[in-house]
Length: 247
Ligand code: PGA
Image (cartoon, rainbow, N blue to C red; front, side):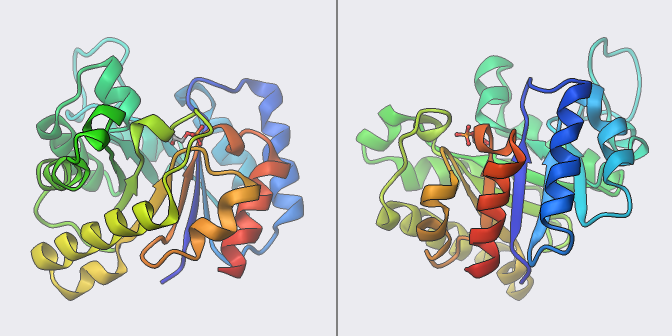
């Protein structure tokens, strides 16, 4: 399985930020892992053009569950594909918290992504209160069951395990805690989707940086990372790519 370093720029990035892509391509012309950048929708087309011919794939951070229509402010999966994207992040905890996205909605969005030919990067993860209550495995398992549609394959789906309390906080679970959740996700995927699910990439996300990436990538069933803050600068994201190449 080829591992995946995925960058989520969130609501960051304007024209000037494209220079980071030039720097990333120059530093990693032929990376030994897959590399994905998901900029804000306003930059997707420009970034896709800039990365065209390179090893960097691009994607969206969300899509609507419908293909088109009267949905002011939303974008469809087909629009992401039209703008050069190949992936879309779905069910990120910030979408779940800020926009009340349910597992059922994330499931519908994932189907829309597949229909448009995109790979869905489906996010799951527990809050601090849920972890402290010993509910992590049950919460993540429930999100996985509800958010991932029937028909998931290693080609159309990537899972990102992102503990809500680790996102943007500098806090990271222990390697044992990460391993326990990733092992459980793998077991649930193979139980539901069969042997092919061994090839579904399971990313860890939440305060991944160059300094902690190598130890996280050494955990079994961690097949890459979904990176927020440290994906904004080519030097930082490059350090994470380098760690993944050596994992
Ligand atoms: P972070 O964000 O790397 O800034 O913690 C991760 C994410 O939300 O995908």
